[in-house]
Length: 215
Image (cartoon, rainbow, N blue to C red; front, top):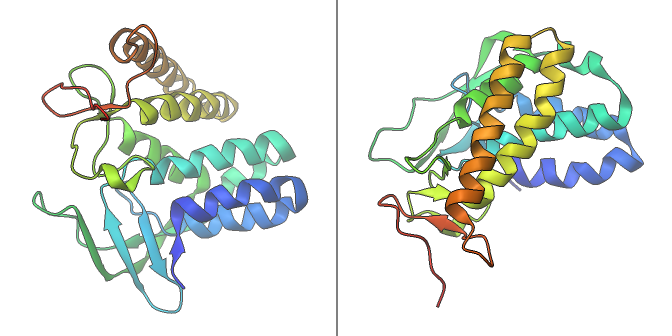
């Protein structure tokens, strides 16, 4: 049975109220399936050393999201100091949307805080309209052919970065916290100016700026 980065972190949110230690272990376990470039394995086989590297843009943001929720619930800032390795695999070529392959574990370990920072920095990719670039999916894996910007991801990114900005302040990383505040403000402005049609928020935009329409 494969393990999914996004799915199992989402499921772990419930455990914050039932067994916070379980959620803590899941955070550290999933952080160890992150690449040093900041992206993560979409899913992997725990009994093997194989997993799938993709361009899904929301997967990686679930790590800082859950870290923020965990700390909010438990007050356990010590988790940020935990040293966690990375996985390694050849980076995707420009013409590849995903690749299933064997991964190796790095000898280098970094704090969970830096793992989370790497995921956020990797996610900071925006279109000309100021919205977050979708990659090949934004929680909805069926969006893999749009290759544009995601309104949903822009909302999610605002929440993740705003909450993690408070953690940056706690860690004394004030310059990064300020930059994240600026990112959130710019995203909010773009969402309300570009994505709002007067009645509903649009779902996404294609690369050429055409809004996604549902028949």
